[in-house]
Length: 203
Image 1 (spheres, one colour):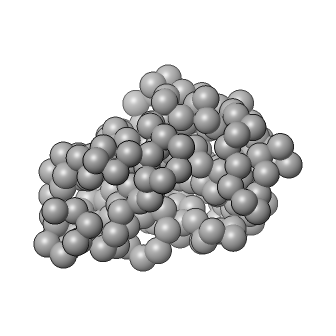
Image 2 (image 1 turned 120 degrees about the vertical axis):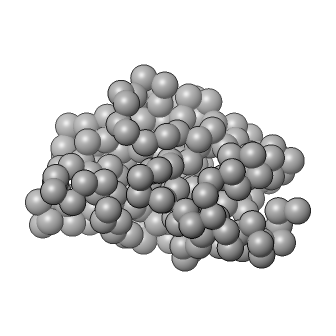
Image 3 (image 1 turned 180 degrees about the horizontal axis):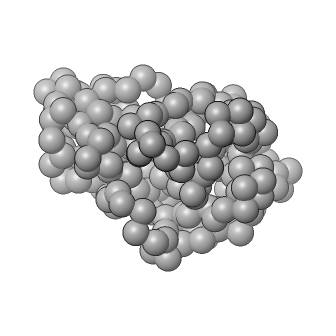
């Protein structure tokens, strides 16, 4: 598997370009948080064809580049079902960005997505609808803002719940094999084994 990380925007979001099959130019774009034209340029320069935009959740810092990518390639943006309303709301603002100043494509609920060959783990807590994407054969999970290296996502934003987040980490993510690489929404990668042993936020 090829995983390219483009760190984008003021909030330094990790946008992932995931190529499950090295013999194919088909990829998934996970959390294009900003700098959509830069993401498009990378895909074009590498000869890659995105099958879909996948969002781990709908906070503004993870979705601001969606329109550029989706409109250029004519693909859908899949949003966790419980976050669709937030994606489309003018209340989804995160200073210094304002939702009304951004362009967004029409979201499609993740439950309407075809079988892309990976598992969608429901991990609410950071938002009501947060999910992680687990590529079993590739031993990789894309955790959004649910789990970071030695930390977890904040829960003081609308829709957040600390107890729910911790339960999501323990029940969904910590049940994965320990050698699974964790690719978070911000910051460096980790592994499930390291997080189980050393993450003091999850006890």
